[in-house]
Image (cartoon, rainbow, N blue to C red):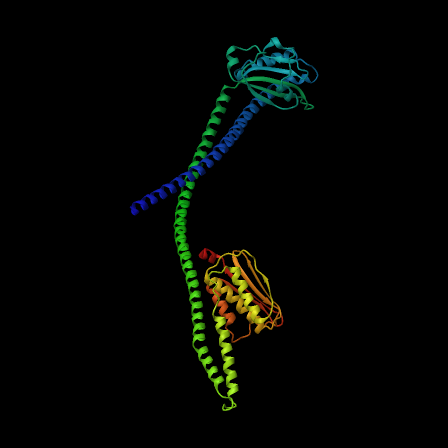
Length: 469
């Protein structure tokens, strides 16, 4: 059953990766295709328009130059008059009635600058005035204008020519002496061949641009496909690494919890051992010394040796020291106390022994801690306060407890003489505290110098609160 579930999970994961790959290809290719199609349309339109304009302008320029070169000498009198002499008209009729001009030019007429038709191969409109068109105005300004015009309502031409694509051309006639515009030549040429050429050119341009676009799309698809395959492989490798790292992380967390529990258990065992030592000292050597003291007191002073009093004093001093050691090793019953009570009890005990008041900064709401952590807090306060009195010769002490970045911070400071932390000492108190705190995953900080007082800080992780809950 488990193997079937694993197979289904692998199949589902593979299907999901394939869907992601397909979706990635679709997104990239769709976006690239959209951009390329729009760009192709814009470029195709611009290229074909440029080619069409170039072909059209070339054809128009040739026709305009041919016509103007042929008729310009016959229209020079328009510089001083609005009409042409009969002999010039006759020569123009002969010119447009034969050869290439007869087959190429459908309608031809010459305008004077005042808008009168000075000549036309349609004799009925010679001498009449018409509304100036845009082409007429441009030609009078010295520009050549041309465009296709399929309907000529004002002109008498055959119905066949009315439906044919006619190329309407306006070209300026200039004075051979001054170069200024003296008239406008307007003519209509059969534009069927030119229109066919333009359409062919446009179609070829679009085909070429489209072929290039398709080739680019194919290249983009291949690049995106290969890139998607590479990304899919890298994602699969990353997923495998992530799964492996997740397993390692879970194992590390499990081991860390085991280490924490072991540290807590070890601290408890250490405290139990200290209690047993305290009990053994109280029930063994202390009782023997007490017996010795009692026997010494029962000796008759008149019969005793004069050296007996110093011995008795020494025995009493040894008994006092052993009692102090036992009290230091044996902790009160703090298993049922909260952390606030543990802190105040340690301070109260120190004040009774030393006679020095301690400034307290202890919040009323502190998190629960396991027995080993509470014992560590008690030992830390007990040892640091005793060191301040016995070694630092202080007159004022302060204990501050607070929560700082998910850690419990306990700080003990005094105004004593301090010491050089780099100097070697035979004491084991602070070193033992540091080892105890580090074994619980905490940090031990010491700030002191000669004649500046001492500050000792303990930081314990609040993960112990979870173990205590």
